[in-house]
Length: 203
Image (cartoon, rainbow, N blue to C red; front, top):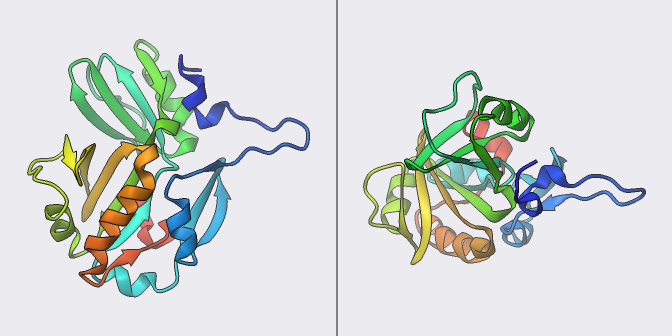
């Protein structure tokens, strides 16, 4: 386990009748939209939202906060042998590795020669996908090369280009604010919230 166990969702476990389930800071906004939730890998995840198919034809906004997030120090070379991970080098001293929860142990093993901090509980991720994803991003930030960190909607965030869209990584306590701002831009283009199942391989 990392030195920051309180940020690790994987550190939680059943104790008698107590069954901990992690919840995203974006949950309230998805509930307001009538999202369907399922428990997956210790998280309560919004898997579907009414009307999402039509929205994806323009721009969809999804919550990927359930992904495991490791900070690896020093950054060094990207990890080999763990397919399905996203590697983001912030600096020579730090990198972020994002992966589905079932891959977390493999990532730890591959990075066993470095310090691995589980920061899953500290960060939220919003995915912006679809034909108008770039337009939404341009209305949120002046960052023009990816991946990169900087100001997004007046807060510090990181932007990764993924498939046909973008992932926004930011402090989890800003989740509701960021969802409101991103949705305001997306809805103006005929988009809106979508569940992770609608993203297919992008999720």
